[in-house]
Image 1 (cartoon, rainbow, N blue to C red):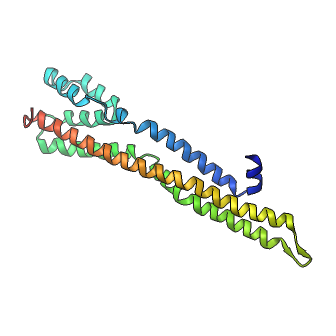
Image 2: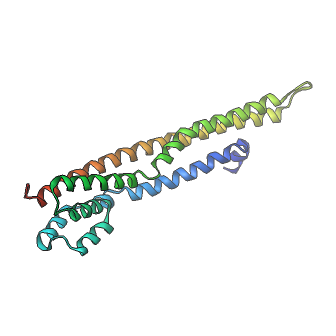
Length: 201
């Protein structure tokens, strides 16, 4: 591995840096976007049961707000339970936007890395081409410098693609998962509103 890095030259180091950042984001988002962490099973049923038994209490609101993103939306909805259905829905939408922004955290960076990696690899290719042209002298071609230039060009291009392809795949996967989670949270929040206002049992 060290031999490859040495052969690829200094342009490989920015690529290594962004690959480490990409892996860190992928691990963090894989953990944070787990369904049971964002929309826990039976949270809606537990919330409805607690509301029907004790009403809106500070203990219930605190537990919901600290538990999960869906819990935070439920807490906001219940804080406005004494208002009309429209006011409750507006408060849910506002809370939902904040939760969505939280779920989207780091995804822009991941998408940027996926887009930039091939360009960074291309930059390494240009540096390698400069090395290749520098190998041409009046006295002939310097084989060592020529080989080094070819190594820089090829390794950086390849490494840029190796970073970009899986990073883009994970970016698309996380974007789709966030969209699915947001839709699920919206549906559950609407059910809560309808139950609070007696429109559904």
